[in-house]
Image (cartoon, rainbow, N blue to C red; front, side):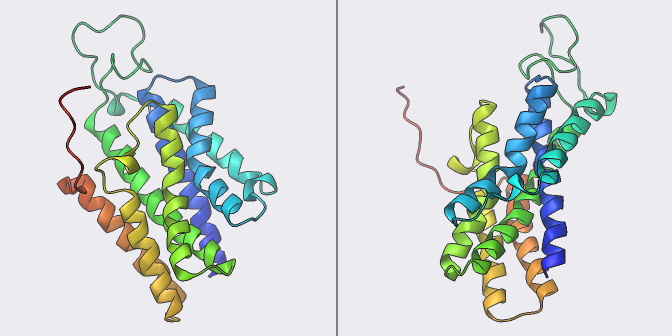
Length: 231
């Protein structure tokens, strides 16, 4: 299982970094901004996990994680410039090169938004398993393992949204942290039942992805307290 989890960890870091890069693209950032947003999205959740579990932060010794996040975000910088991903600026938008203008002055095609949503969903599912497994390996209780899975999967996206001035998905009606909790719960339950490793990983991954996918495709969301009409 360790080798498979390592491969999934690499995959999740890259996918989350791509998600961060796509958000940076919508915000009109430069190469430094892409690298920063991609990196905090890719390794932010794992960093918090290691700190809470009183473990050495993994990327301080495994520097390839930081390299992967930067390269993945920069790949988005160059490939998202291609016409299939770009829409036309709305009428009345300011002049100049619109390719990486802030999102108020450029419209990306639905394809880019779909990529952003699903890349984020895949990373969420992968990291929910990685966080839960790391907690179990540290000797925590199953409940804390689920919490660690949820935090590992959602904290990087929280930092990304805050830095990019986006409403944090885990604090609003989006099915986000709850999807990570679902995946981590399935993973932990099957792990405690000594189910085969492949079944445990697959079931946990699909649980998180399906719950998040329902939110993306059908607009499924958690109930939210109504906003006041007075600010």
